[in-house]
Figure 1 (tube, rainbow, N blue to C red):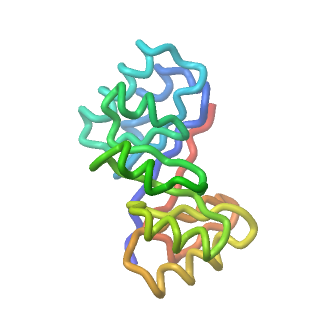
Figure 2: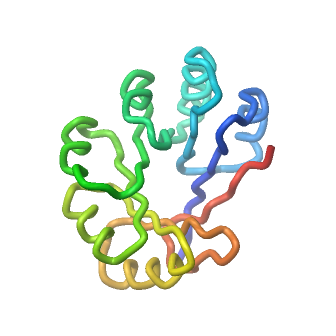
Length: 157
């Protein structure tokens, strides 16, 4: 199975560093945490990434996702996922789950991909990929699963 690259930009990373590192990788999508950036920086970073035909997923911030026309949002699993789906419309919705039940409920609520975190991430990713067609990501960088649809690369500061 060929895994696509999902690049993770940690919060507070210098905007110039983000931009210079985009050319080092060929990600299909970028997870961007706008914490610590001004609105001007957020807008510039999103546009720069999108100009390279890379999807920008905003971490944990629906309002900035909508305001800056990002390609999607990634949220931890919680009640109200169907309302989130309605709020963001056709934008991508990624949901981070810790259990099988959360993953199935997120999928039913309209998630576009499921992410797994924690010690069981590799096992959950394998289970998910064997039963469902909805893409999944293993967010455990120390023991990534070969069954995930995306491999992650975390930019360093």
